[in-house]
Length: 422
Ligand SMILES: [Zn+2]
Image (cartoon, rainbow, N blue to C red):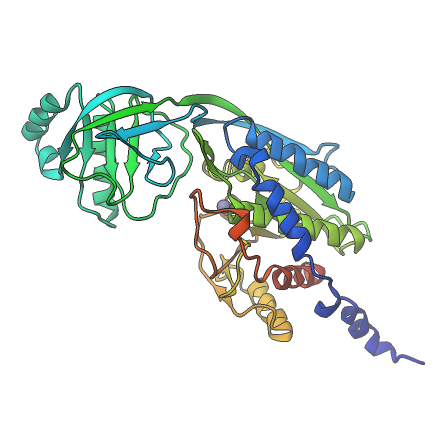
């Protein structure tokens, strides 16, 4: 059969057609189970969790056959972090509370150990300098329970935080939280324990608390980004970057934060893309980076743009993957309004394949590792999936409940996008 020359490009493109790309969901599930399993201790700052995850990802990059960058598999850096390796316990009027479910130790908490009378405070008790001085006199030697009216106003929240911080210099502080407990990571430590209890757990008649919280502050935590290169076939000097942070929150004493959706899912997508492009060399070099320290404040990506291991002017596009484990309601593309061309391409691909229920555009937001790049003027987008389970920064974000609903569809979409970007 003779094929008219003008049809060749179409046929070649057709050889990469979405339907030809095999399912990667089973493989992704194995990756998520491993990364979010107990062996990596929540990929944070207890039992060397983040470092163990880094080693494992490096091993996967080796197995897949990705090249090193500048002869290295890792990019090392340090940052300060507060951690909670020792088991924590909070008992109120004799009832033992469940860590991670009934309460959180604030990420910036210091240590407190003892039995404390509870002094319940509202904003009025701290409103004027005179009143505050009186209140401090009463609180000394006890623990303060802060019963501030819930607010979404940023000024009000800043005031709450400042008062809490001030009180924590003298006494343990228990903050009345909402229905959902959301943990994070801090690079500072307070002088006493700060605890957040879930709404309904601590009655306003509670009298005493037995608190045992011990933090371990690490001024220079050694962290590593992990990278690998899928080399272009024609010797291109340009780069596409695909990134996903592998760190999560680690452990709060005995409570494990598995981080299945955040971001074992994105790292799994990174690994599945690495496997694809190692077998199907791209037109432009692809640098795949698993970032450390994202939850501690985008530390890994910030270090990358300072360290500049590649010619940053050669980065054609960076695609950051974070929270890729659902998809019932499609995907959101952060920074789409600033990167209209790549967003339009994603929409066009999806119009052909109908792989995703929706490709939603969102403006710039400094909410993941694309941000330090975008701030330097490097074209960058961030893709997360929507719908499905909504566990986030809590002990429930587990592999068993992560649906990976549109993982195959998103993988096909990204393969097609990365194969056509130049
Ligand atoms: Zn994340």
